[in-house]
Image 1 (cartoon, rainbow, N blue to C red):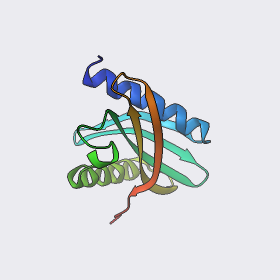
Image 2 (cartoon, rainbow, N blue to C red):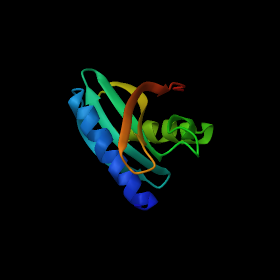
Image 3 (cartoon, rainbow, N blue to C red):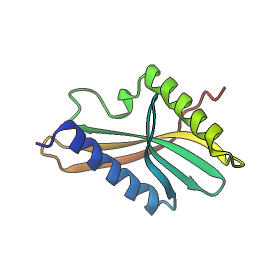
Image 4 (tube, helix red, strand yellow):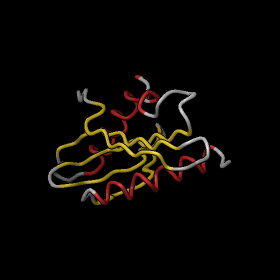
Length: 123
């Protein structure tokens, strides 16, 4: 069984491939500031998507989407805001999405779901 970091890395690779298959262009992966990290920043058309990837093996700890807590949502909003402020370019329409990657207990890929606009309180 892979460790937590390896599981997360696998989920991010699956999510990036899923987004690319849907026509997104990956701008950055693992964008870091001292406040945290955005897993994937991707664009498609006039949308700039800040993507949180949640990977789970089994549902004993809940579904991947359930693991995006209110605190995590607030952090994602702050990180996306910091990125937009630092970008210094006319922004595309920003959005925070979640991509969930569900694996079976044996590690087999069961499902990938892209939840557009999963975090929606831009201030």
